[in-house]
Length: 311
Ligand code: 13P
Ligand code: SF4
Image 1 (spheres, helix red, strand yellow):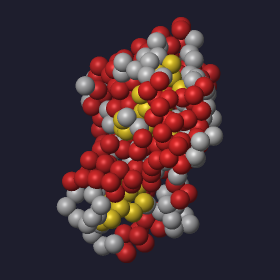
Image 2 (cartoon, rainbow, N blue to C red):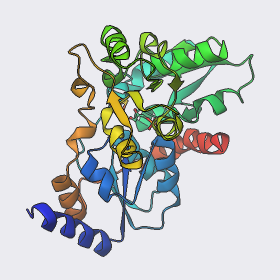
Image 3 (cartoon, protein in one colour):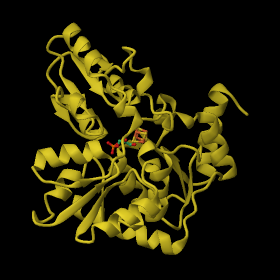
């Protein structure tokens, strides 16, 4: 394999040769964010995947994101540098169990977080991302009963904010679940006045201390506009790369886990993607996302509803 600058040059060459676009999520390693054509949150990346005229989408993110790109752009080749890049929320929600849950509640619609399998999307009515959930929920009549899965913390946050009961699937993101309230309070005491920005995948004990709650792009926007000098960031710490690039004179500190540092909050799935694996994915056009057409069309219905309702 090429190394160093040769590796970067080879990726750039292959990208052109394959007519590929590189999309990356904010939780990717900085070197992948830096060479991507577009870096964004889950909703923005879905829109980019749906709109691109590239022939190949090299998706630096996790499997459900690459699958979303394939559902929305079936004629493109979609490669994911490491097919093992899953998500604890997806793992928490096996389709057969979700189908049985739905059957037990026939008068409920399923409003489902995009962090789930294609099969679960096919069993859902409307998909949401963390940046679109509030806009979409506000369009659903108050009398309509709702199942929300698979993230019980995002569901709980929405439920409290909208004062609206929802049946919650018991999944969690292992990354956001690992933040420690005790360590966060110690950090706040060391940086008096520093605001906390948190992702709604955090448990309520962390959200309760947040000055801003929102998606990765929302948190980034907050980081660009808050008036202070130091910000505590309660989400996957690789997003800090974009903050430091945009505002080098400010200080961004990742919220801590129980060991007092933020390294335990690195998403192990996102971290599987590397420059080397991106290079081989572009070279071999593998590993490739493939979805059976009937399943794709069923999953597309709930994703299309998200794209219509989110705008
Ligand atoms: P957003 O980028 O949509 O906020 O999602 C965060 C996330 O957990 C992606 O896995
Ligand atoms: Fe899944 Fe959490 Fe990793 Fe996002 S950060 S991919 S929700 S495990």
